[in-house]
Each structure stands twice: as C-alpha cells, then as structure tokens.
Length: 291
Image (cartoon, rainbow, N blue to C red; front, top):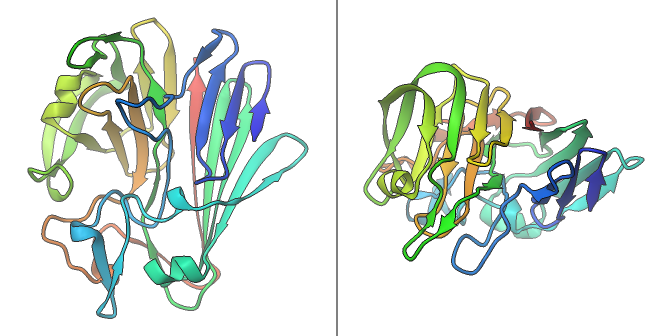
C-alpha cells in the first residue's frame, strides 16, 4: 500500500500495519531502514499489548499463564486495509480465536497514515470490544536509516545525533544486566544533544527516556539532513540500534515500559498499564517531519 505527494512517498504493509518505506522525493533518498542479513530483520512495529519483553515470556490473568513474544501481538498479525480517496491508509486488527489464546481480551486496534506536505501523521486507535476491562501498553517503533561507514567490527554511526529544542534534564529508565527488564529510573544527562554511536548501544542497550518535558526530538544526520519526531503525549521515548552492523536508529514513542526485573505476574497489577472499559477508545498520534 502506497501514499505519495510531491514531497514524500510511504509504503505500508498489512503485516503489522508497519512502514516499509519513507522516500524523500526532494533528496531522492530512502529514509526508513532497509533490513539486511547482518542486522535487524524489522523496520517498524505497532507495539501492542506489551512493550518489549515479559520476564520469562509470560504473564498471568486470574492465575492462568499466557505467553507472548517480544512487543506483543500485532507485529505478527495481518490486518485489513482501507483507503479513502488516496488520502490515507488505515490498517485494522481485531481479536480472534488465535489472539484470545495468548491475550484473553477482545479489542480492535487500528493505525492510520496521512500525508500532510512533508509530514507523515500516524494515529492509533485502541477499542475495547469486550466486557472485561482491557489492560494494555502500546507504542511505535520506526527505524530510520543513518549515513555512516561499515568497518570490520561495526557500522560506524558517529556524526549523527539526537537534538532537543533546549537543554533537558534527562531521566533514564535503567535496565538490569541483560538489558531487558526495568530496575529503576535514574538521572542521566543534562544536555540538548545525544551523540549516536555503537558504543552508546553497547553501554546502554536501549536508551529509554522519560519524555514528559519535551515534545519533539530531531534526528540530525551527518549529511546535514534532519528528521523531526513529534512524539505527541507519549510519556517515554526509546532510542535503539543494534550493537554492530545496523545502519539505523529507532526512535520510539511508548506508552508503557518493559516488564520489571521482579514483576508482579498478574496483568491487572502491572505498573504502567493503560485500561479501557467496554466500548472505550484510546487514541494517540505522532508525526514524522522531513526537514
């Protein structure tokens, strides 16, 4: 599925409702990471109903065990696509007998893409179609291609950086030694810039920042181009790249966090969960601006 205007074209797959291309027509350049064999096989994820990993891969609901993979359900599902006069793409996911085995709640989740000049607007809608209260986390996971140099032991992404509009007192969500589960939130840096490098992601597997005090982050590339991510009201922004050969940075607005290192297994007791009553919606939108 494709949308385009004079500035940009995007491709979206019904598998997970994910972006597969963001093409800058003015620069004749692909902006979204394109997978290769020695790095991450993904590009973008509609994260739902859990952020990242569950401790030991499972949770409980009323004492019964349910297993879920990393980042939940939707990344593995095929959605239904709708297009309105070529102006938007909408992909819809609905709970079914297969999802209820792993996540015993009824839902409808949609993602909509709209082009507005040089800006891509991505909006999400989660609807509780069941009778029980719907517990969930959700987020986005676009990975943007970075210029750099492939060396013997890594793809060197130095010279690219994340820029904030002003100096921020950044707080980091600290993960335990396997870099998968939350331990604490700590003071990180007081800065308006985070320099990107493979060393950064070897030292901190995923840089998860509390994002209450800022609305936008700017990806400033070493070639002089800039992408601006307006994260809306998402309370967290995660920055992630693989440790070696990935020529990308994922910039991820999140509602929620990975599981605690010492978690309460019961889903209704987990911190950072959102809840919807029957027929209630949760809506969220973020924007990608090509400068």
